[in-house]
Length: 435
Image 1: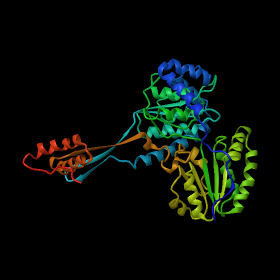
Image 2 (image 1 turned 60 degrees about the horizontal axis):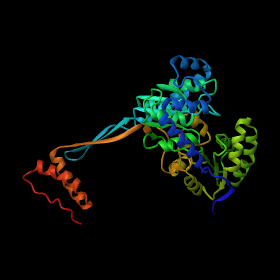
Image 3 (image 1 turned 90 degrees about the vertical axis):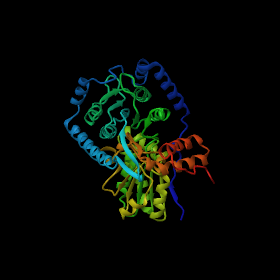
């Protein structure tokens, strides 16, 4: 049977962003021209903050002292997990050299970028975990200079727990500046900072648009949209767990899609009954987002079998993908399009968001069909090199000259010709292009 939508979204996360683009372009241009002073003007306007932009060691120490010991322990636990996983990822990339043909050696080097800018949201929610995810991975990658940038609150500054997390994870500087102005300051090297070579971390639509506009002159982790999550559930799934997981992700934002894909009608109907009740039970600040996300963006899809469920999931390419079904190994082997995968009810997206060790900066809006999320590898340039003996150079030069001439690139061909002429003056070679 074809997919049956028991609940269909009335809106999509791809809205008209023309006004956002206009605003962001103006701010970036103003700050690039006006430097530190203009960035401070925007900080006063949007952050309503006029304190130190770059936190002093004394300010960092004072903020850290405000963090309760129990929370420090939890942050350290999460940092250790993220660090261990990032170190394991880094170990999968090695410097290599390989003799391609006799006498021609090619190699690979992994070189970390020298300056990373890590944006840590601090608006409605203080994203402590984003500081852990971004700064830790940059540190493990051996970036020479790491800036953590987070919006300050009026009269308060950056949330102390964010300061503590950024500090213990290895930030060299912590900057109290939010939004486009913070992204611009890291990119343009304001306030005495080195110019960032890569910008990472989640943010609102203005931060995302600033990163998109700056991409090219600086690297970015990805162009992110609203967070999204999909749950695959069969008849063995617990509707209470499924509904709770969907609500937990809907609270991210009013436009954060959540999707349930199942081959069991009774599971679908029970989840649809429970979700509104669980949303109503949230604190008011969370309830508003979750209610709008469920009302306007959520979908519940009934499929015939697990193969159709998997195909549906791959079509959506969700940022977060949870499987609550039998035969988890089958799903791990079959599924191919997701930012991060959570197998079985014993784990959940919330674990990955906060403390499990895998990164929570992930591709959204279907981008998981072609890319993965933030990892230690994002901070590393995989570059290649080669060297050759004269004998090793000979067959490569002959092939290069012929291919280049067939392409009509005579200059390239002559770069090969001169080496053959110098190294093998007694030999004659057929270097003409023939079809």
